[in-house]
Amino acid sequence: MATANAATIIERRYFHGNPPMQALLAEAEVHAAIARRIRELRNRAGLSQRALAVQVGTTAATIARLEHADYPNGAVAMLRRIAAALGQHGAIPLPHSGNTPYSPVFPNARPPRG
Image 1 (tube, one colour):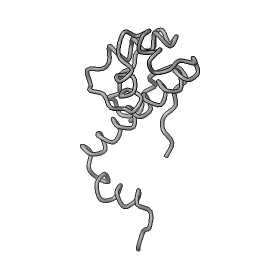
Image 2 (cartoon, one colour):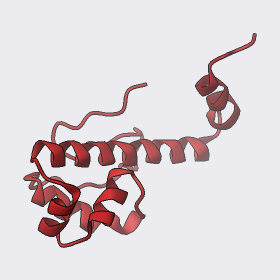
Image 3 (spheres, one colour):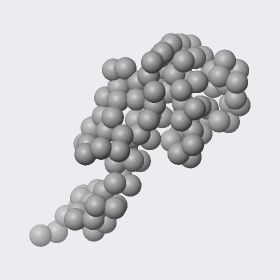
Image 4 (cartoon, one colour):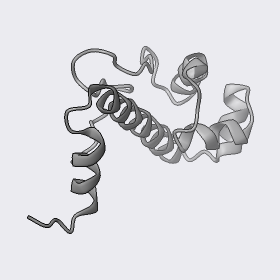
């Protein structure tokens, strides 16, 4: 049975029955959700990346990297500062390591669809 859907082919070839790859995919999905939420909250607050960076005490380049899910695992402290600067007190942005691939990072966050 031929499949024209590239996502289905990739899933079958690289992820189906491969728990380590499934874990990497789940982590990437969490990072992408965090990045989307940071950008959404920053935009809702009417802040540029530079303005948020000033409030957080970092650079606009760092905010840009975080909004593109390009950050190391050690970025938790920075994510906490961003959450506080965007009025998300008490929200600790930690990727979930349990049985489900998604853990809310900010209040009202939703898992990626698909």
